[in-house]
Image (cartoon, rainbow, N blue to C red):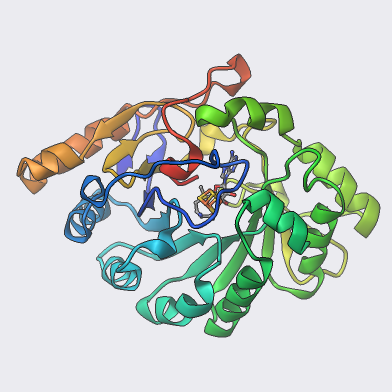
Length: 326
Ligand code: SAM
Ligand code: SF4
């Protein structure tokens, strides 16, 4: 089992498959982005070698993200290979859902356990505004396909002040009355070149909860208030699904952090909101042995930073969110 210097057991790896995306969400990236050339990204065999080493170090949970992971050519094959690795219990996917209509079934058949779909509003015009390029109906079709395929579904919404922090959060929360999904509201984090916009438009958990409860009734807390991953979970009266709040800004959860990230260009990112990274691609391409690579990863994890510095206005600016994977 990989442990850091603070005794936290680290067993969850988020893997960014590409920094490219077919949307341009305002809270994630600037409109004009230059993406990395394919040669800079980890190739399929390199990815599988590295993920295999993490599995040997006791990692149990893998989540593919991006950029938009469904743009990666061999996604289904990658899922199949990782789901079959010894020690791996779950393989998840975080996606904008645009291509899920075509991919949900093959992904499920390949061994995908669950899908987290980013959806910030149910209003088509506002959806276009927030994503700059997207069509809401593509995502809704993707969600239907995911349901048909039997995938566990969570929705991720990032409320942005003045954009989707009003009726939109209520409409998303209302979905849980009928759907057995977890709808999660994520506080917008300042990271990369657009940290100024993010910091000035963040909406706190307290505000979102108050708006939902005013419209739909008082929520009860689930799991005795224990975090489910990074989310605190509630339920509306009579609801089939639940509502989660991921609040790194107002209620940091660093003490329970169990994850590290692999960027699409092969950097081991030890904390989402810290710039500290260890290059795994270079030693891999230089032909290091599995033992040496595994020791490099274990030592990097040992030095995982305690937590982020948002309270001190210490922001990580070397990458935007889509380059890290959220
Ligand atoms: N393209 C995929 C998607 O949108 O789900 C995967 C990558 S995206 C970077 C992963 C998650 O990060 C999404 O749920 C997105 O809403 C979230 N995210 C992006 N920028 C964020 C920010 N500044 N603060 C909080 N969450 C953010
Ligand atoms: Fe793309 Fe996801 Fe970022 Fe939106 S949040 S721009 S879909 S990577």
